[in-house]
Length: 208
Image (cartoon, rainbow, N blue to C red):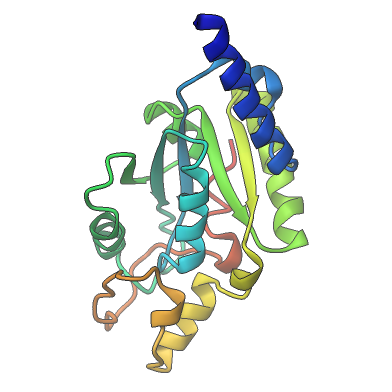
């Protein structure tokens, strides 16, 4: 029975490796672990349908995901941290496999604190891939924490938090760019002192 379970786990991991060939999840990693916990870091200002797609796809091969909102006090966000936490927590309320937390500092430090052995990142462009590949290599060499890169679904490549915020500034309807059912709070009159950098949200934060 134990051998059968190990073979099933190895087969599942081989499918993951074949599907996500650009990830940094090694075959040895798959065969040695059966329970996986990952963090999905970003600024999520706001959390978009593209972010939700990454989470949904990652849950097909990861047991638990911590959506980690990084804080960068040197920049500004449209939605204050507490609103972003509440929006995402309300959306995933009732799903025991997902938690939402905020962190200040290095992403790999938070990953260890959260008991995660993987980092999940979404990429939309070649530029995203080149940057994330470098950071993934550094993180793995310094901490041993692996990174899985998921390509954005083709129909969602144009969606970014930056575009959504710009539409909000013109009082446009952004419902098509949010996960279905997510409740958006009223746009704040002022901005708060954290930010994402657009398509590559939280890049300054998740280096080792």
